Image (tube, rainbow, N blue to C red):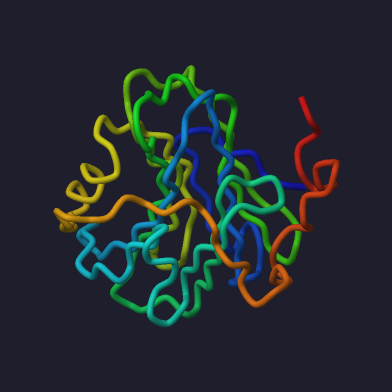
Length: 213
């Protein structure tokens, strides 16, 4: 049974699952909105001191592949693979964020969530909705952070700027002449979905997911 989190709740990941090879899914949508969903790998000062640990559409994995962008699957808008015991020592926090690409604000989003799946089974979910936000254009959804052991925190904090502002907030540098994001035509990783992921979305939501509203 997945543990449901509310904003501000925290837990040791070892209390949720004994696994360290985790699937993180984000579901977020709103009429006419498109989103960039990213993961920032931060140091002990909560800074992006190494740009290679900013995982997003243009950089889908870290050098040792401890954080990988997997694309939309199993009903999730975007998903990641996180292998906790492969994350290098200097990375102390993973911040999962969603930003609106183009016009719009977070108050327009429908009910969504960030969830953790281990061994094909959902173990944690933090649901949110647009009523919790106003004119923000980004939201910090949840963090994995190292405090003796890896822990998860449901954050749900709105942020006024877009992805560039979020990047600067974490101490990263924005490329001035960055090309527009290509249409999402991501190749599936190694053919089939990895074993730790939830089952592929068929006509009905997977059995471990929340029932349809």
